Image (cartoon, rainbow, N blue to C red; front, side):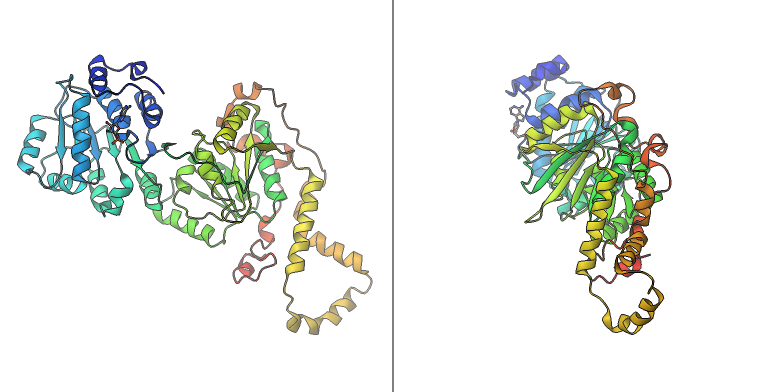
Length: 497
Ligand code: AMP
């Protein structure tokens, strides 16, 4: 664990911290303090109470606080008056030797006039419960126009206690350009919605119980040249006809680009990311939940609101920045007795990350060879055979027409008829893969590509539209009734053809 001295803190702040007996940072502090000191970026931290959250956000705020000016710079919202007092007390101790920094605690059940007086005198940090804060806003006794960072502590509890509307209203008083730090023990759908509505590209960190992966999940990776990444993604989807899964991307931009390309190439996909409105997100999630959508392309944050866990595949188009998120992602498959597959498409420079993830999940990855055209066709034929086998035939309506049908095809023998049916069903694949060319994986030890673009250009649309098997003329995945494979399904007919 890191010593607080290594963070380059204001000596007066460090003295306060040391006086409290803090020597080394707790895991959440280790992750968030250097990050918040260096970056002006939103943060979601999943951590239980008692992990040292207060210092995790409090120390960077106190370090960055500007002693000049009277308007508040930081607003910390928490669910209960007890927690409010506890946070304020701890922050007061940290800044014991920084008399120029003022702090105001605002919570119900205490005298509002003295709280207003403290605000009037000038304050840098406000720690507040939402109800009393709203009261003071309504009385026009506070100006939140100078807020640089809002902390939502125990955000899950605030929502459980019905503070959603108060939060909306308070946050609307703060400037658009600010940082939001969200601390929560759990990541529920409602928290994901807050993240989506109020945060921009947040970094997610998790501490607490080590999230060891389910043993039902097979972990594999494909090594890819950056230019081939999209083509390989398509091959993975083509190989796995019955896939019901999520493709994880790292940014909204990459999510949109990848989903657009796949849609254009005829796959049954939709995108889920923070640029969609609340209603749009709900609609995409509902489609996916009801299996009216086969593949979702999503950012980590957006997918948090989705309570679907029975997926067949998780595809990591890019590994998450925070490697522990890998377990959250892949944990959506391999639930109960089902087996699932988690597939990462990586460049050679990600091998180190794979090794680190192996330690986290306590399982090994296998390196998979890039699917060959012949393998894909074989798999599609096998999948078709399964569908045919499980199909319920509508004898009643078909039988009267069979003689006529056989008469029309009397010049063809059985083999010929079957092959023609296969051609109809598999035509897009046959056309697309007829040249049967292979995609070569990069050498595992070459790290050159990381210098010439790295992950940033992964999924960036244009580079992989040209050349390779990712060119135009893909097949129409939608022409195969995925949902109807071997099962009776009322909506499969809707999707068919
Ligand atoms: P919190 O999760 O912020 O409520 O912190 C839980 C308890 O751990 C509080 O009593 C803190 O004072 C204490 N604490 C937090 N960080 C540290 C640290 N780095 N070293 C020792 N104690 C700590």
